[in-house]
Image (cartoon, rainbow, N blue to C red; front, side, top):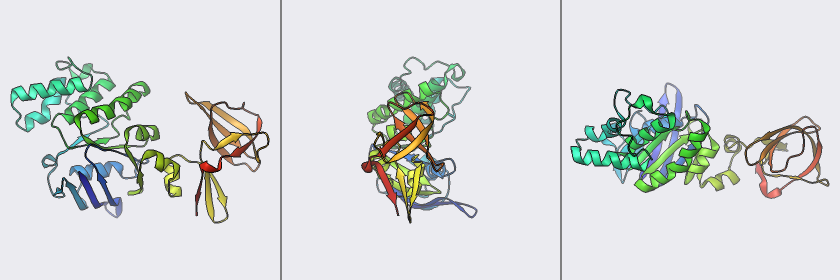
Length: 312
C-alpha cells in the first residue's frame, strides 16, 4: 500500500534520512527501531509531507511526493499528544473530521465509535486537563484514526507514559489498528515495544535502514555488527579479523564449561535476571538467566553455539 523509494532528507551537509526504501502492505505494522538522532522521526515527517526530501512516496500507486500533508491519506501521532487543551475530548477527536467537512451526524457517530474503540466510551464531554497521561494518549490515537487514514505514523507515542500505562497500550495498540485495518509505522528506541507492536522490524542507524524483517529473524540474525549493537547485543569478542557476539540468552551454567568468570552484578528483570560477569582478563559480559548465581560467585559456563553471531 505504501512505497518509499530512495527517500533522502538533508539538513545542511547531514543526511538525516539516507536513501531509504521499503514497502508497507495493507494493514501491516512496521516498527522502526533506532537510537535518538538516527533519523527515524525525520523519516516519518518526510512520509507525512512535513519535511522536504528527494525520492518518492506513493500510496496505492499514487505518487504523493509533492502532495501537501493534508492531501495524503496519512495520519501522524506524536509523543506529546498535541491535543487542544481548550477543547473537550469529543471536540479533539472530531477536529480532523470537521476540517474535512464531515456532516454533524456522521461526525458525532464516528467520534463515538473511535472513543469506544480506544476504551474511552463516555469521555466525550471531559476536559483535556482532567485526563491521565494514558487517557490523553488514547484521545490522541482516536483523533488520528477518526479520519480513517490508510496509514498511521506513530512517533514514539508511548515514551512519556509510566510503565503500567505504556505496557497496557503496547498490548492494546495492535488490536486497535487491526480493528480499523490501518497500516502503521511505529518508531521507537525501545526493543520490547518494537518487538511487541511490529509485524516487521526495521533497524535504523545514521539515517539508513540496515535490516528489515520479522522481529524474531532480525533478533536471531542481525546481519551486521551495527544492527546487533542497536538490538542490544553487547557481548563482543574479537576473533582474528571477525567479531563474535554471544547473545544474552547464550550462556549455560556448567561446572565442566570451558569459560569462567566472577558474578559482578545481578539485576531482577521481572521474569528473569540480568547477570553481569567479569572474566579473568577484565571483560564484562551480560547474560539473561532464570536461576542466577550470587554476586561474588565464581562460575564456569559454556556458550550455546546456536546463539552465537559472527561478523567478518
